[in-house]
Amino acid sequence: MRKNKTTKNFTNAKMSSEVYFYRCKVMNVIYDLKHHGIFIPRIDVRIGEDKNKSVLGKGRLNDNIIWITTKAINKGENYLYHTVLHELVHTVFGYGHTRTCHLMSAYQPEVVYSKDKLIEIFRRYYKLYNNKKQTKQLEVA
Ligand SMILES: [Zn+2]
Image (cartoon, rainbow, N blue to C red; front, side, top):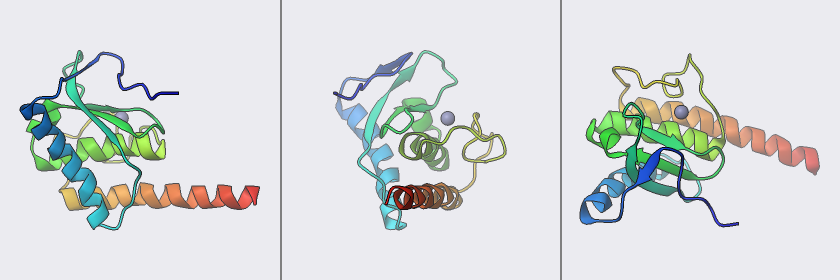
């Protein structure tokens, strides 16, 4: 089945040099993970606007696709890392929201951690996910 590239209430922007620039900024966050030894599958990245102006991004659980608003990108580097890594935890690892987690709370904190600190939180989900995957493989072996 073809992957659905749209999500509720979100308007995907048509490709233009401006949208390309925004998309590069998001892709750079994803590439940066590789430099930190974190390997995730290829991710579909869509740029656009959500009907709900307080939404910064969306990620479909376990589907390797994220939607990021230009608002999230314009907020600054650490905020962009927060939004992208948050949506990646949803779409790559399939985890939902955790009120006690700085990265995975449903609302972005007023002040976010530095990008390095955010990557370390992301790494914890990455390890958790890989351990779970390994256990599953053992079970069916
Ligand atoms: Zn979320």
